[in-house]
Figure (tube, rainbow, N blue to C red):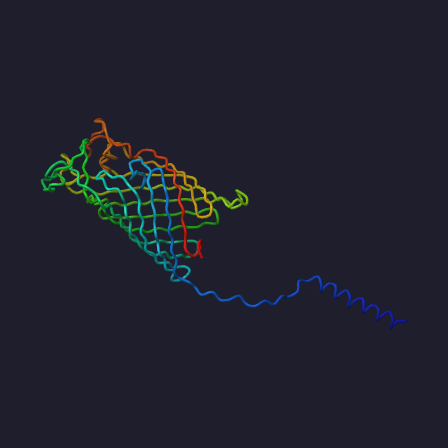
Length: 330
């Protein structure tokens, strides 16, 4: 009788153990995934249309719509170190009648954890310009040539034929988490817009990216971003001199800021932004040589011409598409 009871208990124990084992996930042996070779090359490119092309608070397209496009090959030395070169194009409307900005740039982007750095050189080219001065010599008596003498603006402003220049830059972005990022930027040029005046621009940026669940499964994303910057200037050469300062004027330093909201869908971004500066109309005109400037109540020691409203508050709407070869095409 005892043997029978023990045998029955053993059978029940084995059955219970089998039932518990059946509830556990069975090991599934799969073939190892193929090793994908690391491809260091990538290309980013895109295009945009905007209601106004604004650069550091100052319109470059005379408050008219502008189009832009860029092409940027990249080489990833490692996952944390990228080399790049690029070129971009923007339609503009300058005082010297240049109609396009052609940029050539290159640099290096190292990443250390949550910090992404960017160091490089950016060249701004403005082909097709015409010299506007209306006199054969500048205020210091330097001859300017027939073209400068033959062309004059009705409001008295002047601008060189070639205003191309370059800047060196350094940037860092700290990605705090999936929603917040903070950046610091620094740019320096020995002759900003070929005026002879050095230029130094520093800014801080911030960006909040909304959770991906905000718009459900629609695929739409949203962000809010802004920038606050300060532009310093040196003294121009004699071409931009005035009676009080015949060898050149010291351009007014200024603050600029912008804030906006953006909506993303796949490769598309719609950015709506407000931009402004603290430049007066007189200082704005002295720096921009705005051909649309008018009035006579804005004259100062460095501005013998009218006042410009180019540096005031501006709203910009921009629709862009951005693609990277590895992320969006392959």
